[in-house]
Length: 471
Image (cartoon, rainbow, N blue to C red; front, top):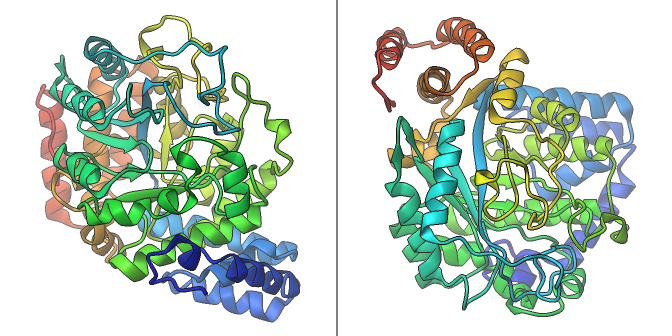
């Protein structure tokens, strides 16, 4: 029985409810009056239910689909402005005891070299990332209680935060590791992590169990209920995501929004971020083996529909996607992207991009500076800001800031100051020239005159060598 307030996975992600939702969406995909009403409701910026959003996703009226895309772009600007938060993944270990059919780290894969970073190797990787200009990392590791216990993850976090190299600091570590216990989530919170990220992969229980035949990840309920344990452990920023291509995309879309509704109903705050990865080629993994792959056009529509359904939630797209796909996605609601990413263990210290331990093929292989340059030429502000985490503006406090539209007086100047740091310390000459002009133009958008003047003063101090200002 569907119950968003239930703590049981099969009740807040109810299969019958999803099937009824998809049938309802099919029955109304040409219902112009209903679709128009849903679009009007979305304009109120309070979000949509999974059923309403599913109707928009199913819609086959071209002009109405265009309206949804236009609305998605406007909502993105209203809540996040033209800022794009930058981050990089850091792979700590590819040891894994699970048998996931879509991941090259699966336990039966004997062709992939297994590697686990020592603390000295973590240090070298972090310095390489700092030398690019990164300030925010998402650490990744396979599930292996012997090789990758929580103590190892915590030690790596301590190491990362301890490294001060030239003007480089990693100011926030987000964590993407397997579902664990309330006690372990409490330890992660105490270690000072930002967002805890866990992809569901698929919300379809039967498919989930088939795709995870062995290992602790086989337990659908334990995995799906992980975010509730994380929040019980004090982590108030959590990130959801499905791996599109494993199951029918409309099923996943409904399940994803039901999970967001569940978090809102139980904890009073929805997901901090939603990621939208697609199955990609990797060692021992052929994406064509999964027959639910989606076109770029459908993928872009999914992003737009998520944005109008959960207007306050950050959206992440990785270097799995090409430059062309990422360019379109940025207009439709994406607010965070990775840059200069390597998905192999120890990959950042290698001169040539290693492929033997990659979790997936990287489509966008540009350097961080090339991505920053590209974003600015497209009118976006690359932001290296981590202020909200460090000022305690997380969970419902961040959502209040977002909903009150105070972003332009807070996040906007923070983005400009962290971009100025990047331009001074890491940018190529052309990138710096473009960035200086962008900052000068964007300063005028700060509505509060006092905040604007303080920002101008701090930008001058950054040029004179001072660092780490924030509102």
